[in-house]
Each structure stands twice: as C-alpha cells, then as structure tokens.
Amino acid sequence: MKLDRKHLPLDRRIGASAPAETGIVHIGIAQFHRAHAAVATAQALAAEPGEWGIVGVASHNPAVVNALREQDGVYSILELTPEGESVSVVDVHRDFAVAAEETERVLDLLAEPRHKIITLTVSENGYRRDSRTGGLDRSDPAVLADFAGGAQTTVGLVARGLVRRFERGGAPVTVLSCDNMVSAGDVTRSLVVEFLEEIGAGPEFFAWLEANVTFPNAMVDRIVPATTDAVREAVRRIAGFDDAVPVPAEGFTMWVMEDKFAAGRPAWEHADGVAFTDEVGKYELVKLRLLNGSHSLISYLGALDGRETIPDSRTQPFVEECVRAALYDEYLPSIDLPSGFDPDAYIARLFVRWTNFALGDKTARVGSDGSAKLLQRIPAPAIRLLEKGSVPQQMALTAAAWIACVCPPQGFDPGPIAREMVEPKREALAAATAGASNVREHVDAVMRGGFLPDELVAYEAFTRRVAELVEAIVRDGVRAAAADALAK
Ligand code: CS2
Image (cartoon, rainbow, N blue to C red; front, side, top):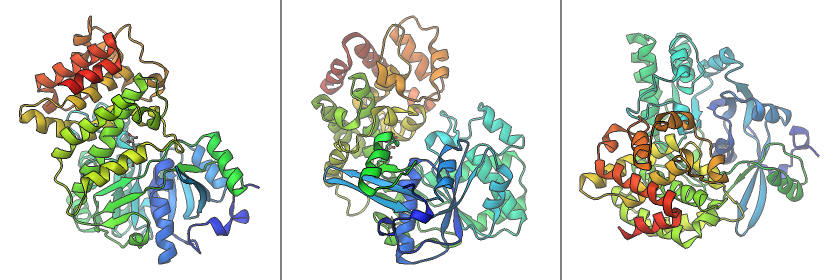
C-alpha cells in the first residue's frame, strides 16, 4: 500500500487533525526539517490547532518535492534507538515548490500575508558566506547573479521575497533560521540586509524591515541521517506502507528559540524538546561546540581509520580519548553555560547519542561540507585559547584530519570514506595547494588560502601545529597523530 492521504494511517499520525491552511513557508525541504521543525509543528498543532500548515520549498532539487507531492505531502519518521524502532506519520505540509523552477511563485508565497513565518534549513553552506569575513561571498557566481536580478540563493530569495512583501502591503513576518550557525538569526538578518543594500533597497523599505520583520536566534538539534533503501524497507515492515521519502532519526530532539515572532507562531512550547529562552546564544554555543565540534572530530578521525559510521568511530578508544580532551580541555571552558545547565550530564548524553548503532549515522555525512561547518565550530574557541598562549591540540587535530580527508597531500590516500565526503571547496582547495612541494607548504597553502578567518590563521603556532599533525597522519597514520595530540 502506498502512503498518501487516502491511505493515511491515522493511528500513526502525529496529532488528531491537520491544518487546512498554510502559515509557514519553509525553505530547504531536506531531511533535517522534516524530522525536526515539521514534527514539532505537528505536535504543537495537536495541542493547539491553528492555520500553521507548511509550504515546503526545495531550493533546486525537485526529487523530494516530487515524491512528497505523490504522497499528498505525507511522510513518515522512522525513529531508531537502541531500545527499538517506531514509525510515525507527519501531515503538516500542504503545498510544495521548487524555487529554481518556480521562482516567481515562491516570491509570491513569501509575500502572502497569511504566511507569517519563513523557516530555513539550508545548511551552513547554503548561506554562501565568505570564509574570511562571514559576509556574503562576493566571489560566488550565484551571489553575483542574484545581485544582478536573480533569486536563486537562499539569501537572495528571502531578500527579494521581503521586498515583494513590502510592496504588497508589508504584513509582518518572522524569518527563522534553523541551521547550525552561531547567532543564526542575527547572521541571517545581516546577510539579508547586506543583499538588500547591494540591490539598493530604499530607506522606507529598511524602516519597514526594522519594525515588521524579526529574525530570532535558535539552537536546533536532532541527528538525522540520510534515507536509504533499508529505511524504506523498515518502514514497510513495521507500518505496512510504502513511503518513498521516510526520514530516519534518533529519539532525541531539541529546539531552543528566542520568543521574538512578528506575527505569531504555532504553540511549539507543547512539542518535545522545545524551549523558549533569552539564553539562546549560550545554548547555541553548547550545541555547536560540544556536539558539532566533537562530531567533526569523530568523523574525520573515523574516516581516516576506515570507520564507516559515527558509532563505529566513536567507540574506538583513541577517538573517545581525543573527544574527551576536546570537550573538557578545549570546548567546555570556552562557553558561558546556560543557567541550571549540567555539562557532565549533557556530555554523557552525547556519548550515548553518538553510540546509536541502530541509527548508524554515517561518518561521510558528518564530514561533508567541512569548509562551511568547521567555521562555526573551531575558530572562535580556538582563538580564545591561542590568545591565552595555549595551542588547542584537538582543534588542530580536527583541522588536520579534515585537510587529510578532503585535500590530501600528494601521494596520501585518505581512503574511500573520505573520498565520499561532499566538500564544496574541494576544487578550490586542490587549486590552492597545487604548487606545494611538501606537507608543510601544502598545509600553509590551505591555511592562507582564504578558507579560514584571518584572525585564526594569524596564529603561527596553530598553523604550525596543524601542519605537524597532517605530517604525522601522512607518515605514521591517524592513530599516531591522535596520540601525538593527546601527549601535548
Ligand atoms: C552534524 C550535524 O552534519 C554535521 O556536521 O554534526 O548534522 C548533527 O548531526 C546535527 O547538528 C545534530 O543536531
């Protein structure tokens, strides 16, 4: 039986009724949104009904949108935990679009007054930021094309959608980034404003923006791997229907937001793991550094050690030792913790989450897009330690293992898992390092090639340590490099 509205298994649906009208436009209809904000919205609506159906917009790739249209917008979540597996059905999407194919329609959707929230999950890389400055990447042809009139990048699309909204009466709206970035709301606002200034939006528009558009900061958390045929089969076996686009996910979920909504919001406080607080900034750093920073380390060490999954990597004693050192010696001291927060309990929980063999999260997934992700995880806490005169060994090891994986020095084979990692800067990294005649020069070319903020690269001691660790990886293997980092 195919999953669709005619064959909706009501006993598995989250919530007794589904919204008829849309109130949210979501950009980035990939895995994470469907297992995170969409689930929270379904749970919120179960507690307090409202017209908060979601229009799911894919930026470019029509595959998921087409599959969801076939299923009337309904799909399932396969929760995979060490205790067991379960299937639930999410029914909150009412409409879909592919921005690259239906740009005008998407701009209209963003402008419609009934749409009161625009949510984004486009990944760190989707914001097209300059690695050195954090502003828009003005060497990116897509950014330049949007300056010249297009709306293909997320920032361009949102900015032009806001202009249309202003022109059509200016109903207030909230833009809510749900990506793993430090101060995600503030950053989104500043990128959108930079774009609007570039295209010459006028003072009246900016006055409207100031008074009517909010960009709350938020911390998002749920480990959501890619969908595989095994996931589709498990859903069929457990629930008895065929879902082309189910989403596998862990049980844990968390979403901490600033309660700064310009035109209302669903009663998300009723959803699992949701909290509204003024301490979002602290939660963001906790999550981005303790979870995501360590995740990168687990992934790059694991890939170089031939470990296909995060649990397989994390349970290698040398990986666990490095991660504990990273957490306790480097990341934790860099964070001003939220009130009442118990770091040991949080860290214990992280190790349990990373040991979820049933979920089998892939090393290559976490290691993908490193050039964008690491910027959110390493530079600020590394600079903090470097300023105090100490070199963060595990952060240097993370950077070294990333380089070894996605920009291997001449003659070094990082193995099939590293090759599987998607790295948007792979070609640029290869070009920057093409003339290097030894590992030191190679690492130097990466460090000075504009892939990292100038402020971090200015610390010679850090660059030198990264180079030593890449040398150790190439010469003696990743385990020896890890031992070296632990010994310092
Ligand atoms: C991971 C995240 O892709 C990554 O680098 O660290 O996707 C991680 O699984 C999520 O942020 C968990 O909330």
